[in-house]
Length: 273
Image (tube, rainbow, N blue to C red; front, side, top):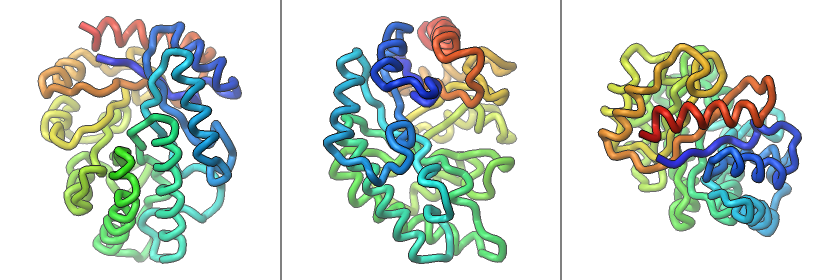
């Protein structure tokens, strides 16, 4: 399997320096959080995105795509399910802009997590929120699909959000959107919050799977906590997953180079067999 890491692990590192260290550690791919390129990604243009992609490729890395899509700019201006039609429309246009940036970088995956920006509002029905999400994603996919960019929806645990908290729920939304550009992203930390074993989740949702994050519920990298990834790697091989296994952490100590190397050592032992 191919291994990648998310660039925000390298906090405050220039992109070129981060890419060089990521490649030196043995990874062949990188995911980019748009806010690491600019606090307001709306100000980024496709030429700047192309330049960022070139930096990664010159270091020997594939740009997988983007993640942490809606955390910037700060404020209540981006939301997938809100009853506020103007906010939803702005979110659609923002995501369409990110799809163009992703394609310009040479990437083809946009991991849609952003739990706070999809929460169902107090007093709002689930069916209304689901319908708003489906309509918004259809509009985003109209731009993403011709660019060969996939919107990879990420289930997240109930401690983080009240919408799309399981792979099964997320697959229902994917099927409602009905676009080849809308698929599933699975994350070990998030799957650990579900009631069923992780291998079963992967097996059941494999036809929709586009991308995969390896990490641990303790917010550190794969192998740095209690989750044994051996059966997870085995079922990914069983279902024929051929995409990247990407490291995403939320605790950045002791430092990025150490995190990157400890994680890929574990990935090589467990996923690389």
